[in-house]
Length: 234
Image (cartoon, rainbow, N blue to C red; front, side, top):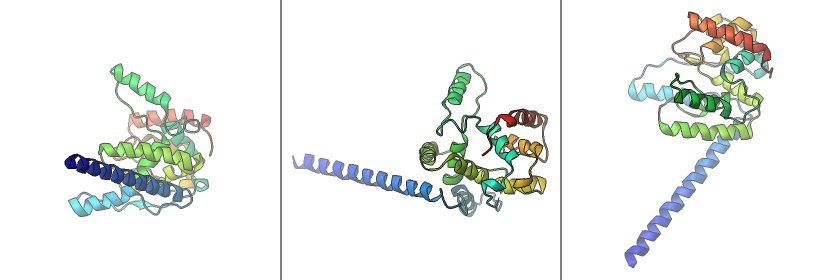
């Protein structure tokens, strides 16, 4: 009887500890997202992670170029190009594009090559709050942060955060760094062709480059250009 009581006491302690840990985690992540509704991040979790990988594991490291630009100081062509390329239902979904997810699932069952279904919100969650690892917990974190972002930020803030923190190549973080690296231009001055080509590399920014466009990149660029006039201006 005494052993049974002890087991119950231990189980109750473990349960309470887990609940407290969960509540602390929820509170901290809520605070993170709430603060970044108003404060522009001086760095991202992934930038810190890459530096730690270099220090701990001697991984290759390039000091990131990162310079924040308000949404009003980013070319409207780039805004339209990114929405056209990455998330055409950005304004109508709440973080998860279930129409796109359904298409991806159908493609998998039909044996077609897999494609991503990540929305701009999901990519912003990854870029800002999570390290670039293949840990399964990262996907759970992405879902959680996506829910919080859609709850707390408006669409303009989500797009602004995405454009400033998305990986645009090795050591290139955000639209301003990308515009300067590839075109020696500010993010505000990008032309439609330049914006579409920058958006075209987003699926593989460490492999593709606007400086050396491949035929498939140029085809994607033209598709983005044709879709851009139908995209919203934020």
